[in-house]
Length: 245
Image (cartoon, rainbow, N blue to C red; front, side, top):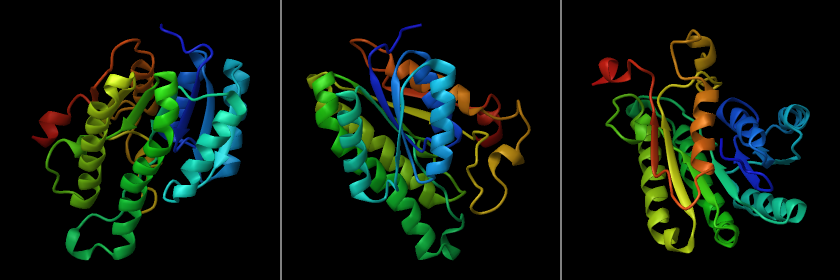
């Protein structure tokens, strides 16, 4: 297993689910981690677990990725604490509503501002530091960002944007030593969906969907490449194509 000894990672959406699992996966490989999400108490619990289990240092930076100042403050705090930034995982994302005709403005803007704007603000702020370290940006995309989706076209569109943005950023900064990877899961057993009803972690039985730790391992794989870039990793539940296409 390639290590991340001496490196620092910033993970958004780190208070639960994929983000929490990613913090553990990166710390287990030797990285110090900065955890960004809105729920400070939950972040502090994750940080304590990461430090106890892996002996890594964990920095809590709470805030909403929809706010440009959050990414600015997070990157500044990481560099001040650890001296640099090597891995950035843009994981924070939400889904709201489903049917286009009944979708509210609030639901629309929540997805746009979190999934699209949040990824843009974080990437813009982190890129200068990643150029310095010749580091890695990992963007969590989705199956919904690769195939037409009848369920929630707006959510799908935000993930198509995220995926296209990441690949185009890769084209722009690859010759400066920065790797950009996209990890595309299908359904994952996390809190996702809790805002509109039953979360995936309760809706689906263990073993029937992808677990957050599986996605975290894919992210860690992308983060530990040296001299190459894991351009895109698809991580679908095994019956996904039979069920969908």
